[in-house]
Length: 90
Image 1: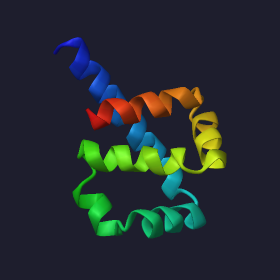
Image 2: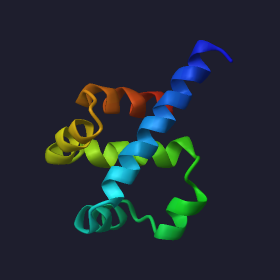
Image 3: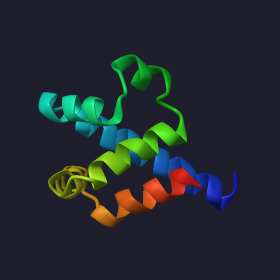
Image 4: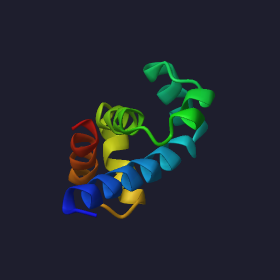
């Protein structure tokens, strides 16, 4: 495995953790579904797709309170969410 694959896998893992955090609160989960047009079935069936994971991170980026709260809950710097999204979009 090369370094890029390792970074891509860590970006995906971070996005999955962010998705879990997002779905843990009903109002935030509802807003994710409403704003992205995703359904719970979409989330389940596309969970491993980089585009879906990037969309979750972009959703968090679009709402500053979430962009700050999510990485705080995950004990990360907010910039790591942005970096992970950029890697997933490549």
